[in-house]
Length: 248
Image (cartoon, rainbow, N blue to C red; front, side, top):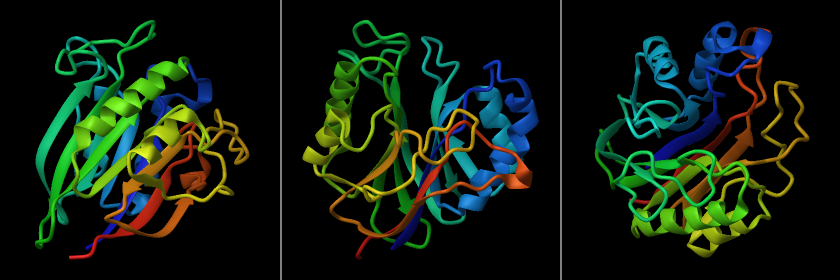
């Protein structure tokens, strides 16, 4: 089975970003998701109204994932998938901490609740199922990021796995090393461009957006995508995309 996967922090739509605010770039964001041509993409910082906007503009794709607040509102780690290729058989949002099913749960001293959207897909035309998890980790505390990464590994099981997200951590961090120690591999090499550019368009910033996969997958082409649909920056992050093969 061949699969194209992506991750993209689309920047929350309530931020005061001036000319880069959501109403001015929502078309470019949808165009970027479409241009990735991925079968499944993890989106971070997606508010409900952003998810609805993307769903309208991308009718070939389904979308799942709950908001991170106690009422399941606000930012979510949405999973967008191509309906013609993949059947969603499981989707759940879990909160990092000692009671993952409790909406709004926070890790110690965290500014916000942090979540993972964990999904299971089966190819529409037949083939083995796989787990796809999308997450966005703590922006300040490395100990919380490491604790979340270790908890996420416990949730994933042993089958074919893909983990994507904004980890707020670079490739040589404790967080990424913890995920690699748990049997995952980063699809990008050490010389890949940065992903966080703060609406500057630079490519030498921090690479904090990652795709990691279990040993079941063969990794093909993988890249940080630096296109500007219609000449506009679609977010303050660049997305990452990778081609994977799962032997059957």
